[in-house]
Image (cartoon, rainbow, N blue to C red):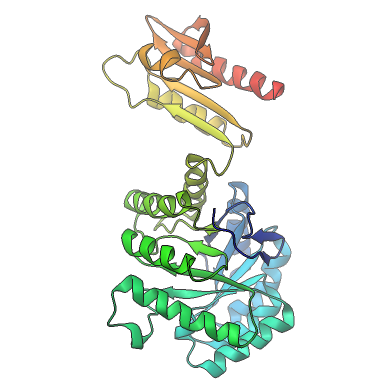
Length: 346
């Protein structure tokens, strides 16, 4: 695993071997405090660990202080173009995000650096497809992103500021992977990874899973955001599932087969119901919902608890061992009862 320096974002320690965090960004108007706070609290409930809000104007800046009072996770201000918005936001947040290349000039960025030092607030810097420096625009996109980012990393370092999180994002998976692999060899700052503008729910999930998963599997990445054109809650759920799939986070794991003509039960309906009724379960457990005995105690024998369709019945099993047969109508309640018993023992 790539070891980085630690950056403190409010109560969250990022990098240095600390757990990889999952974050998102509100799609509300920041100036509407009530709606923004409500969304953040909903995101907290599904596992969001850091939250970013857009700061497009001074009215939004004034809302930051009140928002921070009412939430429980670190608050990040997202600022573009206007360095005065960054200066005004710093006292009220746990981190800011800027792309230095679109702030204007080095003098303005230096003013931001001095304010960050004053309040001991970290900053995420980097580049995306819209903020590549003109001097590097002739290069392949991944190289241009790295060089644009490194130009500003060196500027921050020359001004004795090292409280940095780096983010390089492209809208294509391979450019994102190449750029982050390259930057990971050049700096030891924590990396925020994700595929930007990944798209709507399904294509976005696929792109993000491939891009983020590939990097994390190589030990690259300290915090992630799954960018979707969807409810931010979906971003958090997807991020957590990516971490669980890579063995980087523990929790509930539902195993279910794709179904075929051998299926003796309605796998889709039962699996979705079990998933919904165990949504707040945050302990380590694997639950199997399988269509037949072939895919049941056999292929899912590693599951802590599970069911499989049988002949005119449902088979309930633990660690591959059949413990009893039940009616399909009783399958969900019987499985939930057994899950509770497994949890109590753990």
